[in-house]
Length: 217
Ligand code: GAR
View 1 (cartoon, helix red, strand yellow):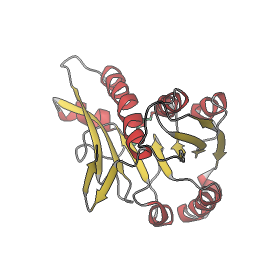
View 2 (cartoon, rainbow, N blue to C red; view 1 turned 30 degrees about the vertical axis):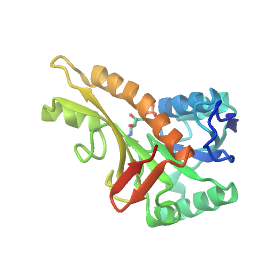
View 3 (cartoon, rainbow, N blue to C red; view 1 turned 90 degrees about the horizontal axis):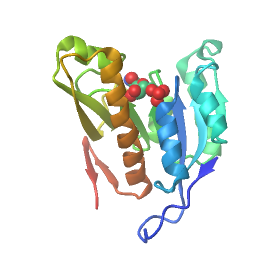
View 4 (cartoon, helix red, strand yellow; view 1 turned 135 degrees about the vertical axis):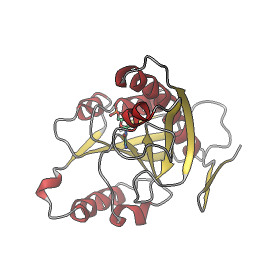
């Protein structure tokens, strides 16, 4: 577990730190950005757990470097998505998790996960939703010829990147961009956007009303 002291001079933050789980499937650079923000006291939270569906994913090494517990599962060993999600939900409930952060978690989720955590589960996507949902959001924007793309953080509703949008950051597409150059600028945007949104949630500033999300001052 990695914990912060909640920063200084923030009289209005709730006293209990937000208990976070990060779901990831790959490199985990967004986990890293979030974990650094927590460690530096920029977010009043603790990262309790990393859930990962790929035993070889680099995010697991990053989690160990931060002393964060990991839970790895192999989807193929379960009869259905619901079956592994039931195990995950039991673990999250046992640990009193407040917020699920999906950061490069490349699996669709079912109502087993969505129902108990709707409004408490967010995802980061590398495009300006509703444009370019699903896999390869960066490549889709390039192929389409979009001039502007970026990153979106949204609540998870069980569809493919369809949940209410919390915040977005735009990134310009340059004529000479490749998947790598555009991808790297979008990731830089993600490293700012995701900790910022998690910080707002930790300060209890985010209100969800239908599809409308409001950030309170
Ligand atoms: C991130 O760019 C995230 O937006 C994307 O996967 C990457 C994970 O990178 N997620 C999706 O495409 C979900 N549809 P990371 O493992 O280095 O954080």
